[in-house]
Length: 301
Image (tube, rainbow, N blue to C red):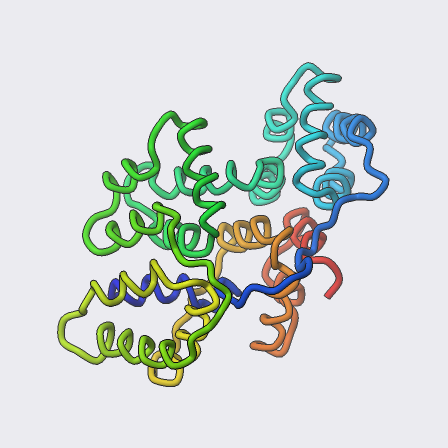
């Protein structure tokens, strides 16, 4: 697959991860519990963990129906009352995809991004799709927080790890995104979008030999709103149907990371594109406690 398509698919894939114009309002599916009590929730979780066979329903009810900020308070309360880390106890009690989601929800957003970036570069082979997705869809502020947290948690510089694991044009692109200097202007230049869509098409598909400098400049410097318009025009030029399949890792990462940002809009777009809700497909493709916690995070279809 060409360098251009790898990047384009991360920005414009069917899972909802495409740039959209900035809008006001809250579009997350997870909201803070108005009757929140960290000590009570910590006690509920301790009891659920110690119950024979583990009370997964209570874990879902508490973890998936609290905001990330509230979960951080629950972690502190649990540590104070139980003398142990909540994440460690849950890791011992749970397993498989359900464990992955619960532990992801306990991390702060920068911690989760850092964890996923580190995992993508760990061991033999690099999961370039994850690197593209995270750096290509986070704001400048979020990328800065990710880099700081990565250094705090792993004692390494994100940029240095990228240099070690990724080469060529993709390395150049990811390092440029790491600078966190991409425009965040919400205004759209329609004429420029048409022109740059054509430039992308010609550079990426319609010529022998990709003009990578054109691609890198557009994809790493234009605002989300401008990229959204560029991709719309690009879709009119390209015959290719671009989009990625999904797996539980991807599903978990998207739903967890966007649950307090724009998951509601992703759900709406998914239904518009496929004529059915994401929840319907989750019910069809997953099962057990993993299905339950993902459905809870998505809310009512």
